[in-house]
Length: 368
Image 1: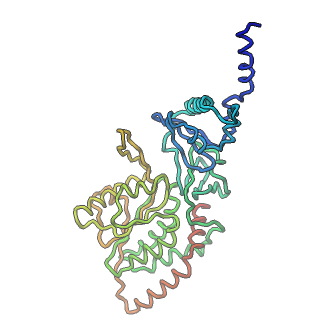
Image 2: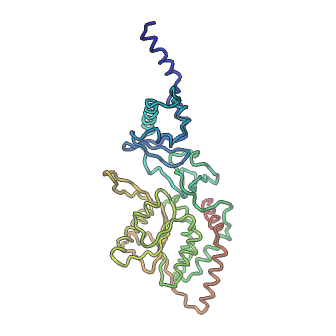
Image 3: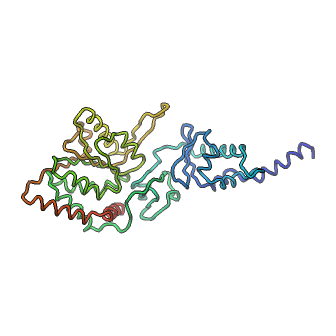
């Protein structure tokens, strides 16, 4: 054996001890999602939220944030000082980046936040911390799907037995006891409360606008009925919120939007409200909303929310909005027993529409 060959022999033996890179990565606690525009996307089991890294950002600290140091030791072993050398970190990064190319292009449309979804033939409810798949609890990372269910704060809906027919009928009964201009408005409000929490699973998302003068019962309808029955699943906004704020706060969630004081009396208010109506219109079908971003890179948003707005006057000015939003108009109760009628209504709302009732109604809709 030549002198050069003898020197190379230990190096060859050392390489044989190294675990194949793909086999090692298959044991790591994160999911590779693919790449797009120079960014490589990962879903760690520990945090459950997506991390996007550019090539130069695959640094030791970033990788340790994705998986414990002991896992990286198992991938590449330790050097003589019990550490992972810079060269070994480069090997790890190289393997990760090139495996991401095999995953293909990652699109944000695969992300799914909190809400109810159809995943093929399966019904999936994303509560933020776990999934309810066809009635069975599943950890976020254990559910096999091309979609990515990212972790978020848990919403307030609990789970138990679904509401009975008699319990569901209470919602319609309460809604019909308000003083509507049109008798159909009560059942329409009840129907919206039933479907709004599962808006992500719908092909078409209805919107309602509760209208009426002061003292007609708008607050009762929106706060005490919609707020109690739908509120745990919803995101609430007031008249100063902008389209951009709503869109960014909702993120990838498919949750109802409750919007109070939806007035557009001055020029700025009308402009702001038109932006929100445009957002609701896109949300009806789940159409993509392209928005320009930094560095001339556009982002695409998808809204999948049922909207409930309320105000004294409507700000609808275009037929496209008129055809997608149902106006539910209230009038003042001028009957002689109006005070007793209101007291009894509020007693029944307080007794019937508990947090448990909201959860049971939601579960009834999911089961159906």
